[in-house]
Image (cartoon, rainbow, N blue to C red; front, side, top):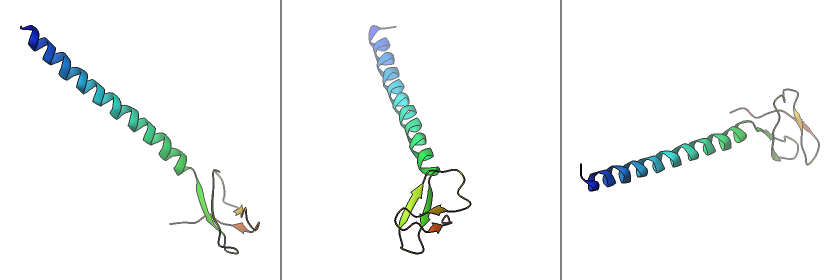
Amino acid sequence: MHPFTWFLILYTGSGLLAIAGLWFYYEKREKRVFDVRRKRRVFHCVKCGELYSVRKKDVSSGQECPKCGYNNYELSF
């Protein structure tokens, strides 16, 4: 084969590897960010109208409002 053919194969292969590497990096990054947001629980205070979120696993007994201290339950969509 000619040297130009090898150059073309290596040039195209390195471009494809770079695109695959970027794809892999951004996919992992997006998954990390989404997991952090998914673990948050959103609350709306009935007393003062404050919207707030908490990063807790078990909030079945409710969560106190940071503004007025009223015990609220998780919003369901």
